[in-house]
Amino acid sequence: APQAIQVADAAQAPSDASADEGDAAANDESVDADPPDAHKGWRIQISAAPSQAGAEDMLDRALSKAGKVLAHVSPYTEPVKTGGSTVYRARFAGFSSKESARAACTYLVKHQFRCLAVGSD
Image 1 (tube, helix red, strand yellow):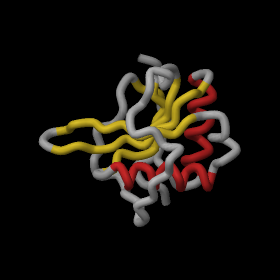
Image 2 (spheres, rainbow, N blue to C red; image 1 turned 90 degrees about the vertical axis):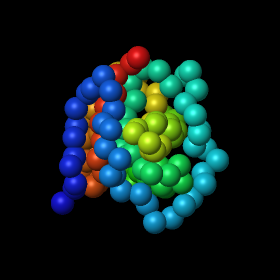
Image 3 (tube, rainbow, N blue to C red; image 1 turned 90 degrees about the horizontal axis):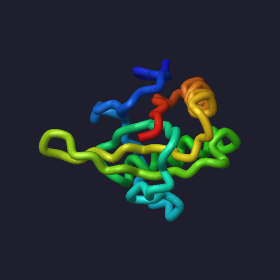
Image 4 (cartoon, rainbow, N blue to C red; image 1 turned 30 degrees about the vertical axis):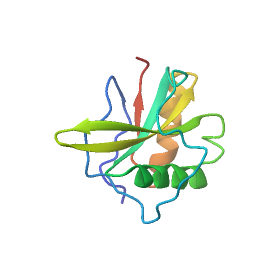
């Protein structure tokens, strides 16, 4: 069963630092380490991992399961300081609307991912 799945829109991302970190430490060149300004509008977050490699692995796994749904959006990681440590958000940006971001989340949830739609800044 999926763990703590949340399909909702929110002004902020969850601060859950206990999200799964993948086994592989893949370094995908297509993943931005820092979100450029173009990553405004609707985004989705699928994980908050304790390492950038873990967040990138989650992005890779989501792309392998939902390539068609995520074909026109950009994966990126976003470091966030929480307490005395840093977690890395695994996100996809470039959704044209709240509905398209939530539809992607619904698809990902059906494939055992956690997902949160995050609105524009």
